[in-house]
Image (cartoon, rainbow, N blue to C red; front, side, top):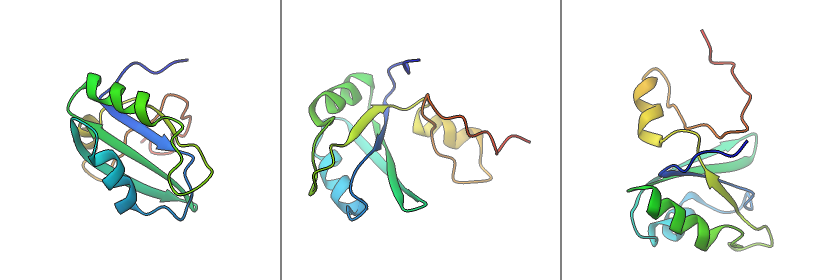
Length: 110
């Protein structure tokens, strides 16, 4: 199922050697950029990038989806399931991250 347009983007499939600063520089050059959260789960880096609004995130996704940053891996960019700020407010106990539409990991349910 396709995820609804969102002002937060999920970014994956980039070289593990890529640093958070590289991604911040790349996405920070896009109109409406607000912030980036970088995660390295089991040596598979992903990040979430928050934009001012859906039109800015859509523009960024159109421009950078498939972009090759310092490697032959084309980045995969899609809308996050939740806005970054919304998921942070819902769960103050942990550093909550937005989820993507295909995520089935519910091990944080209490």
